[in-house]
Length: 509
Image (cartoon, rainbow, N blue to C red; front, side, top):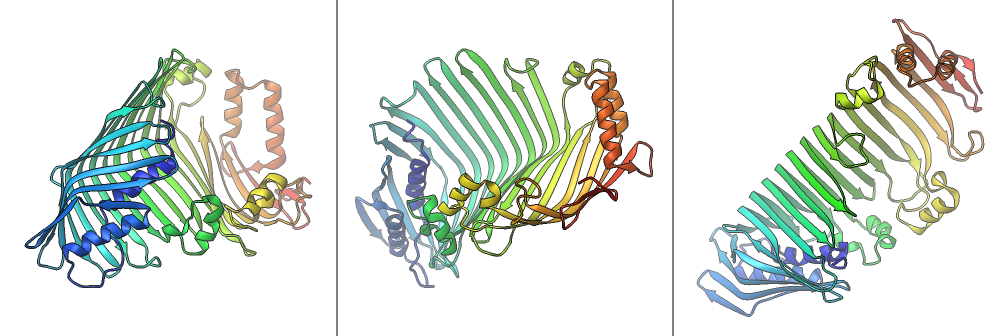
């Protein structure tokens, strides 16, 4: 089964199904005919390494009907075939072609070792309209419901049990297939509600997964996708320079999930939910970026390794983002990292384990780190030169940072708060002054509120020995000076051109 579930297998299935729902380049701006749309589907399938054929084609008035349609594809790991009883292409009289197909069909996957999996798909009431657009062919699709489920499986590589059920309602989609590789193709998909259930069993081990979302939206923009060759990462750098680009965004109104697992007789699990989340991924010659965030997130963990049977954590916001260059060159390029954990809370039972006396404030915890900068990437991010430099010389040989901006730093917990901002230039040619780190030059300003009070409370509850508390106070006195408010410390850390480090004007190094 592992062969069927591989990324290449999933890609083969995606290409096969896409061939049955899209159109190919090559048509002039004019009224479409049913034959043109059907031919374009066949051309697209051929370009994706698939085939789409009909047992017979019947022309009746303004409608072309393809019967006994077979979509097939083959890779080293899996063979995919889709059998559709009938697809009807009807010329609407306004230059467009409406498409209706059988409301149910099977998708069969055959692994290289004889594993077989059949997924039954149904979409009653699905409607599609294909029309000319400036960049190519535009497809508009609506479906009140779409379901998919595993209905048959066989082969020695299969688990003892594998159940898969997917149900989506209120689907609408608009996607363009362009005539030119230079023009990006776009897809916009909205789903009113999505529910997925998976159950897996192998010997005594089981996994039960349930996922649901409402207000799901997906947008994809891609160009030059045929530039990424089968060699994978080795081809990716060249493909990016030749115009490959991917821009993917997914958002939802609400999301929930539940996972229950039994492994070696030990049960564990997690339930979670979130509101108004989004995830984005961009890859092109200017860089690669990934970001994800959610609001009002909650997760409940279960398992014997936890300090209590169930542990529930909540956060007003969870977010992470990273950007880095992809194509190498001698000039600095932008990079950034963002982490946001806003107003995270743990149950009182967790606090009570560490602080039974209640000396520490139980307020929410916030951690925000927003970093941006510039770096020189000597070779392509996915190229052998960069990989070799990373293995032999470390990360600062593979990626050479030249600037770092601390846009925002916030750490707030147990009644104390640390905030900061700063900016530094970095010299990647000097890795000796700071023991392997590029030599910085610049300054950072820090503000600590409630630090001494927190230290006193930690000593009171026994979490911090008195001698370590005294050492911490000495360090704070060395790096900081009193601020304007009570229990407030401020500090300016400066690194000068010669590598000298100053805190509030006093030299430390």
